[in-house]
Image 1 (cartoon, helix red, strand yellow):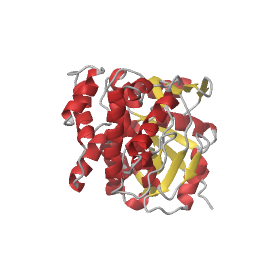
Image 2: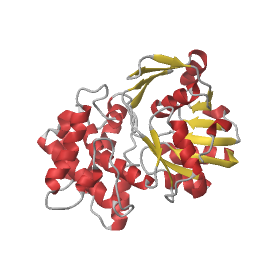
Image 3: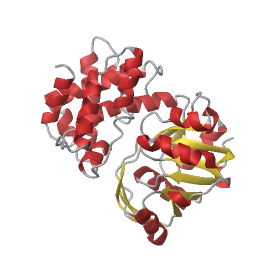
Length: 345
């Protein structure tokens, strides 16, 4: 029997694209949800006018309850952590002590954040989550939802528990959701996708155009293959990410054909979509803010070095992205040449 989370308070830390979307739909479904954010105008607008979400489900406004991060108090029952990966450590240090005795944290984030969370609150109070639906924060009180994707919840030890089944039931009111015994396969599968995606984000163009560029395709294949090699030291089976099959990067006689098909499938899927570029691109081009490059390709480079696995393309991407972040480099096609050069070509 799954846990009935209608009897517990749900706190969503980070009310941006992902957290805000989940909070709106869970509130509508009758759950006791509090959205927490650091942007005063966003919090004020949500409390005064509701949270408006436009996109594939129409244009609707949802009454929600929001508080500024400085005003949050415990004890906290169920925490959905929806902050950027590079804020995970600060967030868990801040909010971990507010957990109730039977409270726990669900990492609804990009990257491999679960070990960071578990280090502070314990593995038994940490739940893994794979999320891949496309949404964007446009302005205070306004989000855009571009597609729907299944959310997967999993215990770090692979058990299917009442807790993860309850979380899947609850989150199913926002997106399709399932419990899994292979959460690491999903998380590392998305890391493989991210290796490719960060390459495309270095160019101010739709993903379809970048992956259909000869050098863009080559670098995307190589970046994803490097992540695959590192990922297979952490788990035995990588799970599909929408149309993207991370297992296509396994070595073999038909590797190039499989890898090319996997990369081009992503471009085809995003061609003409509401969101035809990645969130990484949006961070660089629109929001002009730091990306999660250190928590994704950067983490792969770090782990690869410990495992003796070369990751030259990912290392080059990390350098180029940081130069873009600092305003030292524009987003352009020449960045593909720079990545290839840094990677040793």
